Image (cartoon, rainbow, N blue to C red; front, side, top):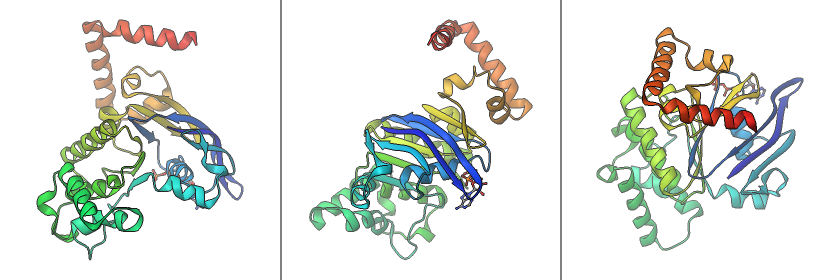
Amino acid sequence: MIELQNIRKGFGEKEILKGVSTIMEPGKVNLIIGSSGSGKTVMMKCIVGLMNVDSGKVLYDNQDFTAMEEKEKKTIRQEIGMLFQGSALFDSMTVEQNVMFPLDMFGTGTLKEKKARVEECLERVQLKEAAKKFPAEISGGMKKRVGIARAIVLNPKYLFCDEPNSGLDPQTSLLIDKLITELTKEYNITTVINTHDMNTVMESGDHIVYMYQGQKQWEGSNKDIVFSKDQKLNDFIFASEFLREAKEMRQLEMFKDGKWREQLKKEQGKEGK
Ligand SMILES: Nc1ncnc2c1ncn2[C@@H]1O[C@H](COP(=O)(O)OP(=O)(O)OP(=O)(O)O)[C@@H](O)[C@H]1O
């Protein structure tokens, strides 16, 4: 579990994160969404410690990461898997060498054990047949899967993905989302994704934090989003007329199914809190 307690971050006079608090739970895909410049990347960098917060706390399983010495931070970092936007593979290394890299840097065990782990991870992302290929010889979607295999090779407790679908077609994007969601549940990982992709929001958003001008404007699940009355969020998510109509139809569908009763109870529960 990752907890943010009132984190603030600014550059010079400009305050970018204006006191953000949230809880990201294990086994859940936690999304950070918001328009360009709303502070998503700065927030992600503050969480992983690539930037220091000005105030507030970042807790990893109740341990105050922001107050830790560099040595302690390193221990937490070894439990973090990262999937970078452009996959960030080493071009001169084969697929299996790329996945082996974190094991060579931080892993323990014999060469045989490490090779077995690489094989296991490549199998998990269905890329065993590409093990000897170089990044230039495989597609964008395959590169992402190599990136995912590399991110999970050390059995991370936390997984950070920066725009995992950038540059991918919608179908490949969905496959990548599905894979990340499955791994999150399978290994009970606390997954944090910074995304602009509305398919990801609707398909995978167990917990969504919507950032607006450096503040958490809204949070909830992909199911809650259809019923949200937050105007800023609605303008962002349902930007096109087509999507606004789709939202209304979804609400009607739930009305027919009687599912609105459940939702209403939930909403009333929230208001009662
Ligand atoms: N190192 C930095 N120094 C100064 N300003 C910065 C720095 N990093 C980010 N900013 C500013 O912080 C603001 C938020 O940037 P951030 O990259 O977090 O936005 P974002 O929501 O991730 O946008 P995008 O969706 O376009 O990636 C921007 O105004 C940006 O110029």
